[in-house]
Image (cartoon, rainbow, N blue to C red):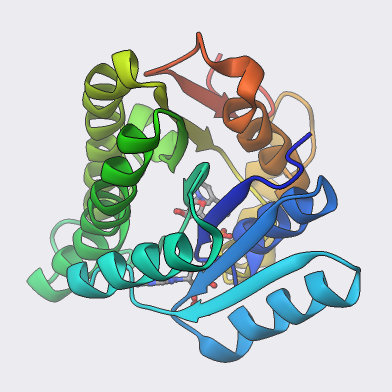
Length: 245
Ligand code: NAP
């Protein structure tokens, strides 16, 4: 489905991003694996190559604007284009508003919102010039319903929705779509930190009665990234087992 397409996934060293990278590679894409952690980025990339796929790894902090331009330029120099950008990298620095520090606020805004801006800005030029592109951004249920202890995270993820809709408008006549996924509660190293008792409570409140898996999100990302989804843009798809019906 993605044969010979060039796909860049940020935060692809583990969790949902690693699953997305592997899924695109299985479908024939050339995958640029970008992560803060060089070791995990190289491991995912090496696994893809060991399975017969094509991949290249980059160490980068998504909040670094110059590095984003460098990484996108390196991908385009090597493969001649960039078909799909998945802005998956994200962090949490949870605290009630009363206790939140400006450092916690800034860290989350810089990674989860400025990071999306940085890679979208760099990729958008290439995609609009070539007349084709699919951008898939990561929002969250926390952006839609709010979440106790996540003022910073909810604000950044709500910002991603506004950014996505505007990029969708600006790219619409140039062959470039922009959409967002808003996962609920997905089993990854990010949520492994949550105490088991709280996890079980959360799972019992999910209508489908299970935690989500990275593959549940990866399939939705591939849908937005497909050529066939060219008439779908500026949308937010909630992937949460019915948590927000
Ligand atoms: P994860 O397991 O923590 O993985 C996130 C990846 O992003 C890690 O490999 C991490 O690298 C990387 N990363 C963090 N900061 C970065 C930066 N500044 N530059 C480059 N890479 C960076 O998280 P996940 O659960 O897979 O989450 C993926 C996305 O889904 C995030 O945007 C998250 O907010 C969103 N999401 C997740 C859930 C959920 O329930 N899991 C729910 C809603 C939304 P390190 O190895 O250095 O940490």
